[in-house]
Each structure stands twice: as structure tokens, then as C-alpha cells.
Image (cartoon, rainbow, N blue to C red; front, side):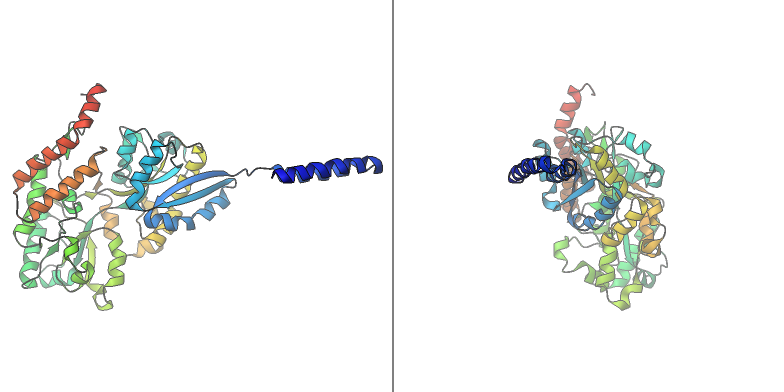
Length: 442
């Protein structure tokens, strides 16, 4: 631009001399000012940096043009991150004071970034927002964003676990409806196993997936951690009850002790009747529709998880939209969060991704309202609970998975597993106890 400015200055000086001789100075001055203004004028756009992960990061760019059109002067730059690298990149960005303005954050990550004071509290903005209604959100999902009484994110999409089942095989075993309690489920599992024949099972519970056991544990009154997250609570009566029910599925031969890698194709095995129940998430609605043959499409359905004494709770999962405390464009960042939270935009986002919206109003109208396989998720989302809100939770969940795998293979019993989980959790929570004691919170 320096060359252009020098040239403009030279032309301007010559033009002024000519204008002075011809008496056309005012008109030339106007032209000169316009030219120089065009040369010097910087962009007035506020640039909002938005980091999003995986498939969501790919398709959200299709929603941005409407936002920019309705919010002149704001431009959004989306950076897609692979899930495998996202956590480390976010930590590196925080350490280098280079966090984005807005970010998609898995809701089990929120406590960790809350502990670092990296996230902007949003209570005031939500209270003043004409478009975000707290009561429109599923309560358990909203709660995942509240840490120590402060709202640190707004749910973007939700994830939970429930039953996928073969209703034809269930009917063949003598049942015309899915289970609503653990006792009913046990009777159905036994009947399906008895009618399935040798080498087949009633349910698939891949030993490398911790979510089914966590869902059973969240159905209990006892919390998974005690004393404000300082200690494990896995020897509680509630967790041992859930663990015993989970272990019983393997010991009674209802479920094979396998990992996902040991099944050549989970959808094909479901289709050929190798198992009749499968605990999984909303992404498998699309997978079963694509992968099962047309003649089997009427034969499968979804149902909420049964609980100990009736319809049960499940996991409050998914991802939220957060604004980083270091953002220099918080107002514009919040406008993007509000836009992506609109029910009509959430319905479009579901059409692009298959992700389930966190607002009840987004479930009315459109393809989602007509999807019979999604209805059970709508029901289940009224009964979801967040995981413990401590930064160490994901590592504790890994330990639960490892111990549960030993349970599935019959290597240890329920009491031994519960005691081992308490030991592992207490070790991981040692630093948390030390920090809380220094804050005078012990």
C-alpha cells in the first residue's frame, strides 16, 4: 500500500497545481479525498474466531452465511479441529493466550476449563437474551454447563444412550413392548437368549464402552463421587447395585464378553440376530437406516432405558458453545451463540449432522418430529443426568471402563471392583483435595 500512497500523493500535488491555474480546485479536492479514502480505509468487520470439532466443524460453515448477512460488520472464521487433537490444541491455545472467541466444547470438558478460569460466565447474557429461554432446554443437559453455580456454556447438541432393539425377535420371545424396569429387562433378556439359539446372545455390551454402565450408575440416588468431588463413591450401595446388574448380563450369558473390535460389523450382527438389544447413541439411527436391508427396516426400534423401578435416567452428553474469557469480541461472539441456538437453526443443523437439538421447541416440526426412531430420544432427554463436574472425570471414566472390562471377563467380583475403583479415583483426585484444602474449602 506504501507505493499506492506515494503515487496518490504525487498525483495529488500535481493536480492541485493544475486546479489552481484552472479554477477547478473544489471538484478535484473531492475526487482526491475519495481516492485516498478508498486507499486507506481498513475493513470494519469484527472477526469472530470459532473453533469446532469433527463433522460439526465441517458443516457449520453452511450456517454462517446467513449469520453474516443478518449481522453486518461481523465475519466468522471457522477452524475445524479433529476430536483426537482438539483437547491438546485448546490447552496449548490457553497457555499461549491464543484461544478463539467461540468454541464447541464437549460438556465433560467444561469443568476442566472452568478450573482454569478460561471461560466467560454467561448468566447475565442469557438473562438478557430475547432468544435463549432456559426453560426450553432439557434440564439435565443445561445442568452440564453450570459449574460452581456459574453458567459457562449453552448446549449446542445433545447425546445420550438408550436401547436399540429388534422388536421382531422380542415378539418371538413373547413380548410386544420394550422393558420399562430392570426386572422386565431381565425377563426379556432371558427369553431372547433362550429362543435365539446356540452362539447368539440377547444384548451387545462392548466391554470397551463405559457408557452403558455409567447410565445404570446414574440411575441410582448415590452420587459417583462424594464430598464435593474429593473422593470416589463407588463402594456405595447404589453403584454396587448398578455394577451387579451390569455384571449379571455377562454371568448369565446374556451378553458376550467382547469389545467392539471383536465384532466384524455391529450393524450386520444386529441385522442377523446375533443380539437383539444394543445400548447406543443417536448417530446409530442414521447408521441402521443406511446399513440394514429394506426388509429389516420395520424390525428395529428405539426405546428409553429401563430403570431399577421404572423408566430410567441416562447420560447427559453432547457439546456446548462457550465464549472464552480472553476474547476481545465478546458481544459479537455472543451474537453467534444466540444465532446457533435458535430453534430453526438447530433444526437445520440436525438435518446436516443428525445431532439432536437441546431445545424442546426445536423438536416440533420438520423431519425430526416425524422420525419414529428419534421419539425415544426425545423421551429419554427428559431424564438425563450429568457426569460429576470435576476436571478429572474423563480419566476416572477411563478407569471405570478398564475395571468394567475385567468384570465382563469374570476376573473380579463386584465388591472387589468397587473397592478398586475407589482406590483409582481417590488417587486421581488427590490434587483436587489439596487445592480445595488450600482454598479453605475442606
